[in-house]
Each structure stands twice: as structure tokens, then as C-alpha cells.
Image: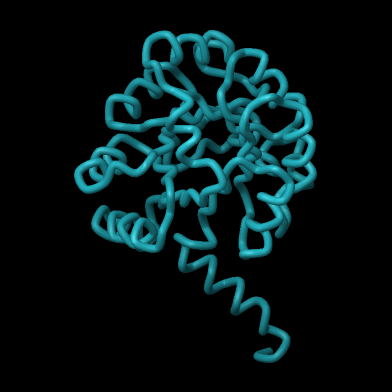
Length: 234
């Protein structure tokens, strides 16, 4: 398990995902983006769902962090687990070719297995390393105690208790505190928009940095520029 984790050390990972209704949701569009970020030097991908993982495996052996995620998100997404919530979900993306299984590591309500059971079952039956998406230091410590291999800041700002952190900046405080608190790799993910953000993450001890919207969501990238000059355009 450690070999694939070492392979992404000090590397940039790109999260290539799209929701229904977005122009790039079309299968060919998303695969083109995946090929483009690989050509640009991405050292890993975070992909959602069996289809995109299987399609990517046809042309690349790049490390893939796999997840499942409902589309659209449930109305109560702030209160419930929705990222790879069950072992069945984990097995699907593992069988599709994911190297690392990412799961929700928060303390929110779960549909089936409790978190400790899910981590143990993935390790024992799928033999894959597990990345847990957390929102707090306490959740990271809990997940590491349960045997998680990688702790990520992914869900900071996206749970009911951390909504105040959902601003323009990555949660560097959470990253720094997790690096000090746990004895395993910590990944920064969430609201990384600039080269300076990525550099700071590595300076604070991040194992890897996962970048999503800043690379793969043209509508959000454009909106940031448009909003920034609104004072001039009226």
C-alpha cells in the first residue's frame, strides 16, 4: 500500500469531476480534461464513479484516488455522509481501477457500516490504501486511530459545523494542525486557487495537494475574473 502513497509524495493531484448540467459533464469532454491535466504533469487524479475510472484506465496507469458521489447531492448534504459511504461503493471503484479509496471521514450520520468497520473491511478485502476526507482535527485523529492511511482536509467548510470556513482560502490551519497531530500523510484539498496556495501547503508539510475547480471548472474560473473587475465594468 505504501508504494502508491509514496508515488504521490510532494505531487500535484487534479480532481476531475463534473455535475449534470455542466457543459463538461459530457463523457468526451471530461476525458479530454483528464488527458490534458496528465499532459500538463499531474501526478495523480481524483475521479468520481466507475465510468470515469474505467475510461481513464484504458489510456493511463496514473495513480487514481477514487470516490463515489451522488449527483445531485442530497438536499441535506451538510448533515450526511455522501462520499463513498458504503463498502459496496468502495468495491465498485476499486474494481474499476482506483488505487486509493477516498471515503468520508466525518462524524456525520452514515447509511450502513460505521467508520471503523468500513476502514477495516476495505483494508482486509480490497487491500487498498484509504484516504479519509475530514473537516476537523478531531475527525482526522479518529480516522487515523481507525487505521486510515491518508488524512485530507477535503470537507472543511462543507459540514454543518465548519461552514464558516467556506471562503476563498484553503484551510491552512487544519492542514498545519493535522500534520502535527497524526503520524501519516496529510493532503490539502479544497479551495486551492493559486500557485501560492500550493506552495504554502507543501511548506506546511502537506504530502500532496489536490486541486479541482481552479483547473477543471471553466465557469468558476471565468466567474472569479468577471467578479474581480465588476467595479470597473459596472
